[in-house]
Length: 175
Image (cartoon, rainbow, N blue to C red):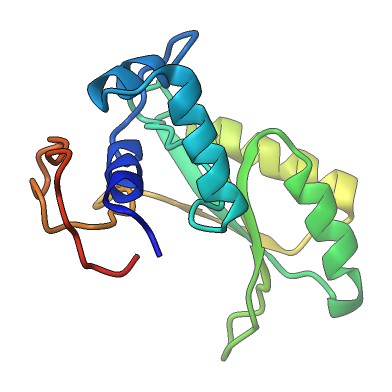
């Protein structure tokens, strides 16, 4: 069971961290904790399974990457692990996952690429095809980004404001 203080920490961690040498320092101060205390609490929450990982969302268009493509690969089932590991190892690949083949869509492995131009995405996919030996693939380019949000827990307080709850909050919402 989470304490009110632990829920408050989890809420605070849902706010984007600053890109700086000590990203948890301002957050700790806002919670009335030292950085050491906050990091110890985070480690404890991780050890107990309440926090599994920290993720970063790259706003690729803001970063100058105007082209992104989902590359759909038709990989023989016996090669899926080998090819999946190879593709996931490319630093250009931000996502790599297998899906079941359905209907007339023969593709079962998917990777996401971000680049400055569609031509760069095409060149990356071509190089990956040559190195993996998989020649049957399709590039699906995004036209518009419709949604990119972060998971939110304990949403009852200060919905969508980023405001931290008061220290005496007695939440009963499950995580």
